[in-house]
Structures are given as C-alpha cells and as structure tokens.
Image (tube, rainbow, N blue to C red):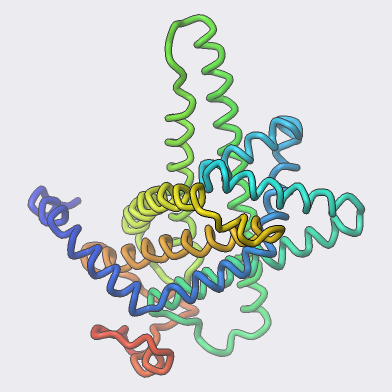
Length: 317
C-alpha cells in the first residue's frame, strides 16, 4: 500500500505523466497503428454487430435487441453517426439472407475481427517495447490466432452483459416511476455501466493481449485513465461527426467512411492510454516485463524502425 506522502506525490505527478505519455505516443508513431486498425475494422464492424443482434435477440427478441444495440452505437458515435451505421448494417443484413452469404459473413467476421486484435497486439507490443522471440513455428501462430478469436468472443460477451444490464435498469425504472414520482435514472446509470464495461474491456486488453507481464494494479489504473480519455474523446468526436459532412460527402460510402474516421481517432486515443499505462507502470508500479515467449526490443531494432527514443528499452535477450 502507498503511504499518504506517496499518494500526494503521485497526484502532483499527473502532469509530467501525461506529458511523457504524449511524447512517447508521438515517438512511437501511434497514428500508423490507428490507420491499420481502421482498415481491419471495415471487414469486422457490420458482421460483428449483426451477430451481436442475433445473439441478443435470443434473449430480448430481434426488435428489442436491435434497439438496444443501436442505443449503444449512438452512445459511441452520436445520433447522426448511429444513423449512418444503421444504414450500413441494414444493407449488410439484407445481403446475408441466404445460407451461403451468412457463412461468408461469419468467415469474414472471424478473419476481420481476429485481424483487428492481431494488429492491436502488434501495436501494444511495439508501444511497450517487446517482441515475440523468433522460432515459434506453426503452434505459436495458432496460439496467436486463438488468442485473437478469444478476444472477439470476450468483446461479444461484454456487449451482451451491457445489453442485459441496460434492459434490467429500464425495467426497474419503468416499475418505480409507475408508482413513485421520481425522475428517470436510466440514462446516467446506463452511461455509468457503459463506462465500467469500457474499463473492464481495456483492462483485459492490457493484461491479456500483449506479450508482457504487468501487475493488475497498474492495469486497472491504466484502464481507468484510458476509459476517461476515451469517453472525453468520444464526446468530442461525436460532436464533430454530428455537425460535419464527413458521411454525406462520400455518398453511398458515407457510413463506411464514418466507421473509418471513428475507429481511427478512437484507436489513437486508446493508444495514448496504453502509453500512459506503460509510463505509470515504469514510474510508480511494478514495471512491464516481457513474457516467457517474448523479449525486449533492442535500441538498434527500434532505430531501424524509426522508433528510437532518448530512453531505450533493454537489449534483446
């Protein structure tokens, strides 16, 4: 446990922490990872939401599930962005009515979503200065794919939990407001639940996805800060998307462009949170060490990749 003096010193250090995080974020060229993730999201977004609606439909019914999912999308993208995504999803749903199209859609989801998490893992490994040791072979590649697929299932599970909690809150609210003259509490509690699920999701990504060993305390602090950055960035981004003509400027491709813009900037914010997590763990936490199947990236390798810093990672094992 930290002493009161240590806690006070930590509070005073937030400014330098964020400054160092932003500096590392710039030096690690995080924007290129955001661009790659935006590309992979093209193949995963619509199929993932369609399958989420189908699974949630087994619990709520298709219409109710569709409304709940769109409500979550609206929380992320704003009303205008959600309307554009709804158009994209509807077009994809119409195209998947045949058995063959459904199978192709599922395969596309698995490839695209696994690619998203695979690219995200590469981004975190690069930001945290580690890489896989050479010579893993086919089994290592298979393990990487299974890990990415497991993350896809984990995200889907968290989405279902979010929908269930939202439905329970709505039911309780309807019951109480029918008997008591109290204002609705669904919106603030739903926002709080969405934030808590973001924290859990980011914590799982930081702990499970990259090839590092990092303490849970550092993970939770980093995930919470990342969720705050993400929520603030989401609000600003939704204002921008809601007032700009990004989607309408591209006609029929407007919804697709909207997804790309949202994923690009959202991933940029997330990677800034990852940089903060690393800086915090190194300064005040237990530090970040490579896992048994990974090693630090040497200064020479970082220089070859154009990622050299004033403070380099330890030499490769």
